Image (cartoon, rainbow, N blue to C red; front, side, top):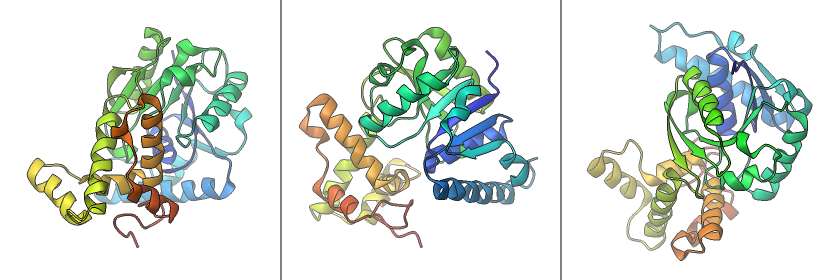
Amino acid sequence: MSITTVGVIGAGVMGKGIAQNLAQTNHRVILIDISESILEKAKSDITNNIRFQAFFNKDKNLEDHEKTLEKIVFTKDFSQLETSDFVIENVTEKWDIKEKIYMELDKICNKDCVFASNTSAISITRIASATNRPAQVIGTHFMNPVPLKTMVEVIRGYHTTEKTIETTKTLLTQMGKECVVVNDMPGFVSNRVLMLTVNEAIFLVMDGVSCAEDVDKIFKSCFGHTMGPLETADLIGLDTILYSLDVLYESYNDSKYRPCPLLKKMVDAGLHGQKNGKGFYRYE
């Protein structure tokens, strides 16, 4: 299957990173969001990210931001997705929102189009149930920041076919990515482990065992992690962490996924991490 046009739904942190990566690997991108202001911010952030890349990769032949942006359509119009060969969804981790989007996509997109969810925890099989093409629904769990992270966790739903997996691998290869294919259970591999680690690290801060800086220092110095769990939480977004834990708790009915009260309090206070400048650290 020739993959030339890719729809990206959601122009937040992950969506704009995926759109940038796709455009820089010569794909036509249709970036969808419900807010004009979010789309404008995505355009500005992609411009800045490309300039940043160019500054630190002076020996590489990177396109300037204008040529990259020419390949991206920034729009609120879902009907433009009808020309897409592949669609990657990146909306918030709430089932009622995702369900409506996939039902709409099923009506708009051509019959061969593959739907990929960049979800953190929601079952791919459940997402596929909202469509009439469950065999063409797959999970693509990209890592942040997308243009710099080469590994993608690919999730096979109950009905996902080998053809869909191969199509997905083709697109990821075109994007300069590698992948590991795993089977579908909420949280998959990465987030079943990561969310527990982050949640427990937040409990450590709440219980007064350590401050955020020292928790992260232990993970970086003792285990060689590039980022500590609380730095990672700020990067992902504390609201996204909470939504993911809620999904895991609901899915497994296991108390080990119970979100830390401090996490809930921080999200209620609007401390979402890097995306709005305040989390366990300040970004100003």
